[in-house]
Length: 343
Image (cartoon, rainbow, N blue to C red; front, side, top):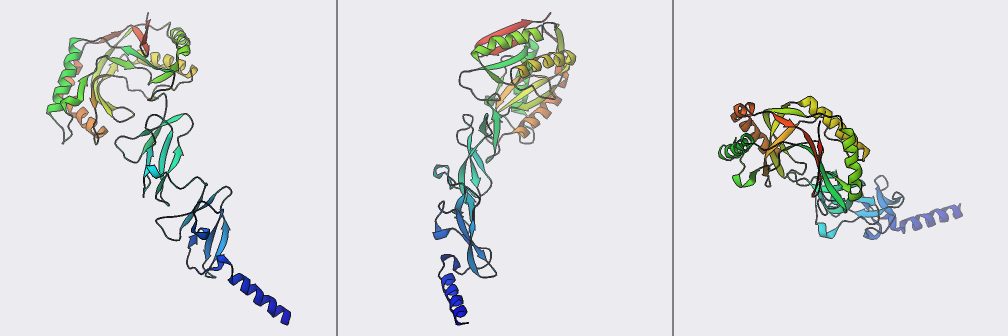
């Protein structure tokens, strides 16, 4: 009996001397020795016993204490702990390390109040969303931005300039600048006529120089039975590019849609063969006649308001526009331009 009592007393003395036996309450948790990024374990309060017990972090992770919330920890990879040059944060927030040039970005680790390194999915580039601070978009290099050694490509149908179209563009700019709708206003200095009128059949994409000849051969084969056709216009819409920094006033195509759909289907097949993305699944064929540089704080709602006003004011003039004949398919890569005649 005496031996049992002595053993029990010895056990109690050892337990009392353990570092993890300090008193605690609630759901408190701390890193051993109050050191971040060192220990693969942490001390979690056993609220029933009122003392800390040792708990293992998941494999490959170490303990970090929250700098903003006492007695709160998180297990994370050893290189976690924030990027000092990125500043501090308190809510869900992200920003690109170098917008449009790399796939790296900083995301707010809300428990630590610090930005940590993050990466876009493979092959995608980070872009800060212009009109929504704290939000980043992942985009393919084909969307926007340069790929080393790549040639920027664009396939489109050219719309020949005419006096009527020039007058439409000039009147759009005049009305947009002089009649702001509900406070939505774009200054004249932000707006300019589009110099090369066209109907796009691809979004921007990139090819290496040695791929251009194969692409053009495939495009010629795909369109060798296409015939010339005409398009007409029946309305006006506004658009904003994927980066959110440029808006467009455009004429909607409402005649010749069958010819456009057939041409787009052929171009899409070639894009897929080359490993490039297809055009929009529900295309709205249009010809941009005016572009506008959007300032900070201006967004799609500004362009929507401008579009509503212009659509009403210019409907009559648009309906009287002459139909336009489409007899070539155009493709550019940098300063190289190719034309395919339509029979």
